[in-house]
Figure 1 (tube, one colour):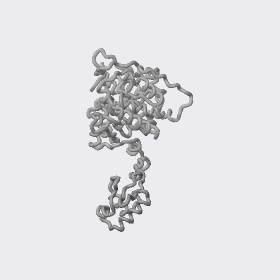
Figure 2: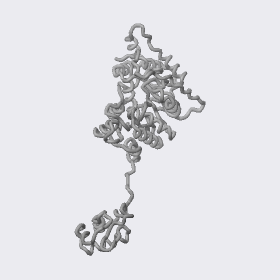
Figure 3: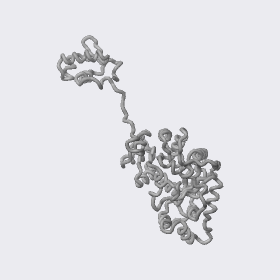
Figure 4: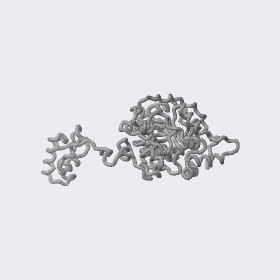
Length: 402
């Protein structure tokens, strides 16, 4: 069982704490507040225990999860505290909750009205609890949510696709969920924010930390219109295993995962695998066949992920059956589509050269009688699709696309 002591930090130094103003509390509670706000819940023994457990149990620890299922949070905490090394102080859950209220963060626990029940699909590896920062209602946002993830070192194509897809999804009322990292993640969040849509950033560090540093302003904007979420305690540092564990939350929270751009070893493929295991929709955006940053998405498609190229195709997968169908693409109706079979055969027998050809040649090409060919040629002339040059007939250059 993994206990949290001194986590191994990433090579990049930890960023400064994220300074987000505590949401103003008004006397008029919104309908959502009654369902989702946990900031004013009493510090019950169960909540205090879960706040403490988050300090000593690493995300995704299955044995700890089974212990909590067996003994409850208080019993599991007592068992785990007895196993702490000598000299390590037991965590103070009440102090954790008090500190959260001080900085505008709240704890959401399993079984509470604010808890998204789809996270229970994770079984023993579901989060002990979630820290949230931002005034939005998690359970409400999660009802219609989709994950948009991909490579950190993405191309311009990946950034544009992520931003465009996220913006269009947000305009359709979908919450865009991603990991607030560089590249595709950041582009997805910015796309949703650009149309004033809700977005959720799931972090691999505490919700009071700005990681990566250059995304500080983005994290602020997410917390203002959506939510920052983490199962890690306040002040927790990111490390590589925590990024992978974070992915299971992104997959479980949403109806489906869209991988926009990914190399073969991209961490976003881990999110897609979790989505598949949880019976969520897995979708991938195709890219250039020669691009290494599309190799991962192409592999997903070969393995059964649904190929998507626009938001309508995504919504068709994750939306309501029969009501969110994508429109069937239709080309511009062409004049030739309305031609009779014999007329079309004569038209298609005409060469593309500017010299054209004779009736005799067209008879041989079309295998129609001479009088039929001549009749169809005059029909095509009347439609403006063919013109006569002496003994030759040719396609009208102005109507070649008709």
